[in-house]
Amino acid sequence: MASETFVSAMMLITGVVAASILIVAVLPIIWNMVGTFSSASAATDKSMRTDFKIVTTYAKYLSSPPSPAGVNVTVWMKNIGTARIGKSEIESADVYVGKSDSFTRATRSTVSLFKPASSQWWYTIWDVGTTNNYWDPGETLQVDAFYPFSATWYSSYTTYFQFTLPSGVSRSEEFTAI
Image 1 (tube, rainbow, N blue to C red):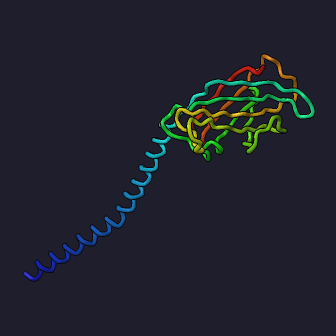
Image 2: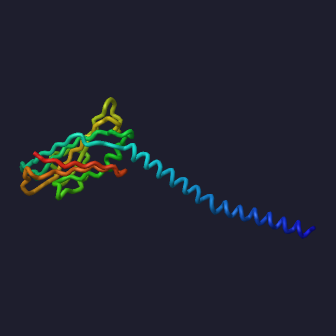
Image 3: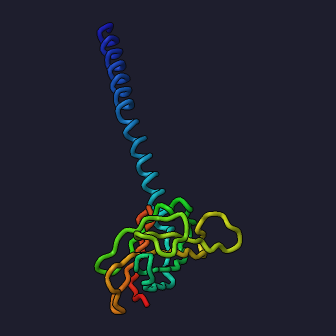
């Protein structure tokens, strides 16, 4: 009878220790998976709610000295998604501009420049109502870029423009400079 009590006590202690080890080993893994799934879900939700459309484009070839010759590009985009896009996201965006077969990544400029020495871009948010430093749904973002081009620009050359947000949402357009 004493041996049965001892065996039962040992089995109970072994079961409690085994359950404790299982909980200590498995619980952190479950919490990490929950965190991973929730952050992935939030990123996917933001990406799905972020959408914009290139409304119209304009590009003009400039050749007057002393500044370098090049193409001045203006692109207007409309936020057609349900998410508002912050100023920091716009400023972290990638802009690619140039001739369709030799475009380059432009660097963001903090001021409007007419003819910089390198490929640069700057932007204006055309707010509806109050200025809040967000590209809200329904508002227009104007992106201006300059692409220096040393050779003769022919009217048959196609200008390439691409705007990519840090979330990976991207739009591009090809059009002819006048």
